[in-house]
Length: 249
Image 1 (cartoon, rainbow, N blue to C red):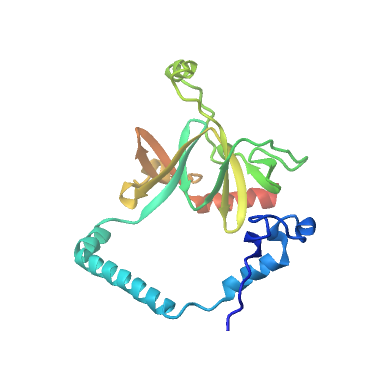
Image 2: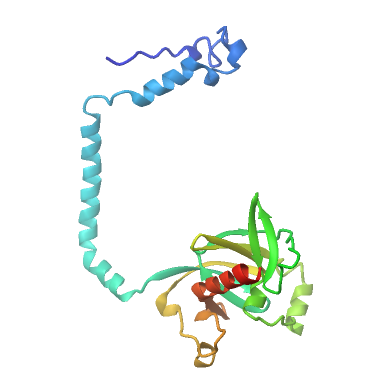
């Protein structure tokens, strides 16, 4: 036999006339043991007769309809899956004058610029220092130096565009937090373009000149909105970061 529930909070509680003597102590009904006990009773009560069977029939009907629809489109769907390659989501950003990309699952957070605290006799041209992200201390890497990217000056056209602040949207620097094999770093970037999805057919092979360079980190080349984007080999970047943080930092 189920325990009966007294909805006293609607009568003498905060939802009623507030005449309950316990309110002087508990302030609000949600702090009262009677209110909590009623909640536990509701959660632990048995399902009404026929309730489970009713929902079993509803869910089974929905599944059967979905299965029938999938069967109708099955041949077309199989063909599409066969023709289309794997879709990968990439975060695209700019460091110096180079557009780069990393898998979205590697990127754990994009945040505004935080102060970097250098460590005496530890910081170097790749390991800048440490950054406090909501209480978590992360190592800050200068990706520009790790990838040996040139500083690159803005050409005259870019300078003119930059002066037109009323026309050109303001570009904000950001920091990207990445996590690979339970290791976290962050690095500053000059601009975030966004998250884009590509099929493997859109990922072009790197030119022979680049691919044969010993210190290249480019895995693929992507063309987007007139930009050539370097899809970074995140595993190679990861092991290089381990080298710097474990052996030099």
